Image: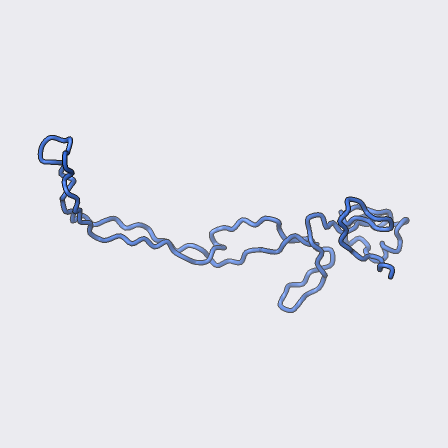
Amino acid sequence: MDPILGTIIMFAGNFAPRGWALCDGQLLAINSNTALFSILGTIYGGDGRTTFGLPDLRGRLPMHAGQGPGLVPRPLGQKSGAEINILNENQLPAHNHAVSLPAKEEANAEVPANNFIAGAGFDGFGTISDTIMGALPQNNVGGNQPVNNMQPYQ
């Protein structure tokens, strides 16, 4: 069976087989490819007088044009998606970083044996503190905003 004009196929080589062209965004002469130009027009580039463009699928996946159920419409020839997405704080799930500290700290350490300091020992050991510990800020973070995970396509 002969392929249909304008068909895109996967090919594992580093050259275009005879009668085919790579989908690398190249411009072709209209006068040498009138039948293919009548199908593609200038959707993928070209001036429409002497040249027209082929899709550029380098690093991209082909995507059928139209709108699937529950999806947004995708026009023929549209390029979109991203290879890398960096999340910002608003795109993280809402959460907090709770820290629990007692309101009162009681020291219960003994004066160390063989203390190098002459005398009764350092006053910091074995004392009880009634000082209220300072509060640590607990901010809620994350905004549950959507993240683009659309891989590159055309």
